[in-house]
Structure formats: structure tokens, C-alpha cells
Amino acid sequence: MRIGELAAKAGVSVRALRYYEEQNLLASVRSPSGQRQYPDSALDRVRLIQQLYAAGLPSKTIVELLPCVETGESTPALLDRLSAERDRIAKQIDSLVNTRDRLERIITEATKAMDVGHRCPGWVGPPPP
Image 1 (cartoon, one colour):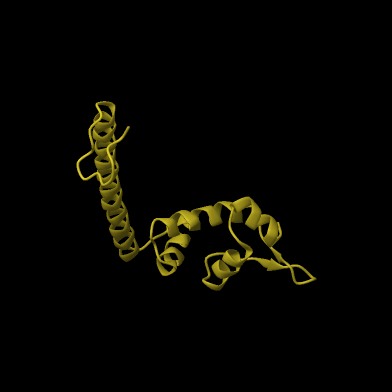
Image 2 (cartoon, rainbow, N blue to C red):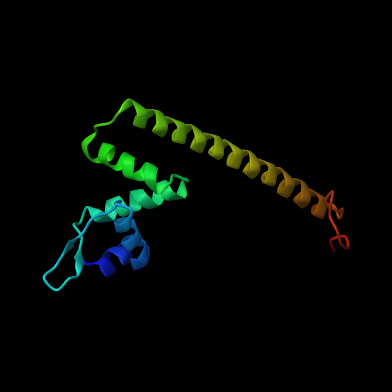
């Protein structure tokens, strides 16, 4: 598929795909007219790259992990690095869950306070109607 089609299907910009190629995260072949052509498997690869970037992994780590994804082969050093990334992400998830739960408690208390005509602790402004 051509670069525009892959970008549309993956929900990324053409510029992002070019950047992925510069970082050796993605490869294409050139048609006789010079257009980039990607295999169908590139869509899954771009989605994986996006997920890993969203999780905070740098392109250097992603480049090192992609061969492991493709062949299943790895090194002890890479497994240690990936385990550390996994643990970092788990801590981030825990922190987000705690923040979500705290916001839920604040919303619940604020809703109760509004139901009885009181202000929520820390509320600035006139009391709710």
C-alpha cells in the first residue's frame, strides 16, 4: 500500500511514517516512480509503534525490541530493559488509577453537597442554586 493509504488506515500523518523510516522503525520499498510501498503487515507495525510511543518508550528502545517481536529472539540485556519498561508502565497505571479514584471520590462528594445545597470543600464562588 502507498504511504497515504497506510497513514489513513493507521490514523497517523505521512510525516510520522517518514519519521519512522528515518528511525529504522518501518521500511518501505520504492516503486519505479519513486513512491513508497508498504506491505499489509506495516499497518500492525505502525499501530504497535504508536502504542509503544504512547507508553513512553523511546525510538531507540522500540528499534531494539522490534526484531524480538518479529522473530522471538532476544538478549538478556533487552529482556531486562523491556522488564524495566513494563514495570515503569505498571507504576504509571497504578498512579493513574489512584488519580481516577480520587477524582471519583471528589465528584461523588461534590454531587452529594450539591444535592443538599452545600458547597464542596475548596469550592470558590457562590453556592450552587
